[in-house]
Length: 106
Image 1: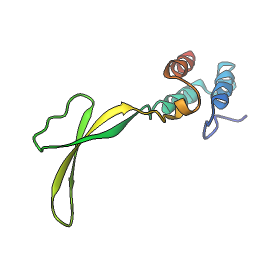
Image 2: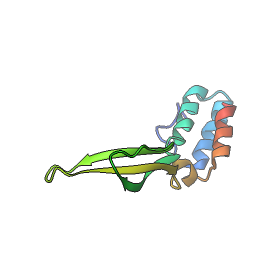
Image 3: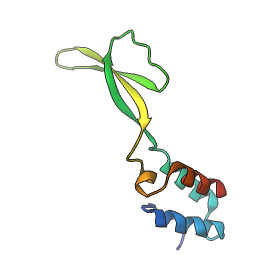
Image 4: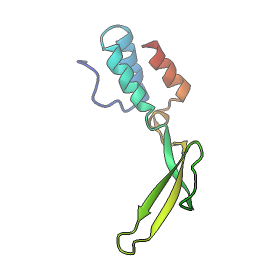
């Protein structure tokens, strides 16, 4: 293999690249960045409720304001940060601790 693959799509890919990086055949820093990228979709924003304009978001929340271009009506939607059950690393068969451990070894 020449360099890190453009996409890492399976647990086997991760483990193979990890072993190559530990043996010096792949750049550890680049692989570490790639594996940290797998954690990027760990959480996602989920609609919680419509809220008044004066609502102050709590920790882990955000308010999005939308204006209907036809009617001019404005609505304020509250979103909360939740765990993404479809995160890429979960779909590969890893849990967060396993992947973090592999990253820390690099």
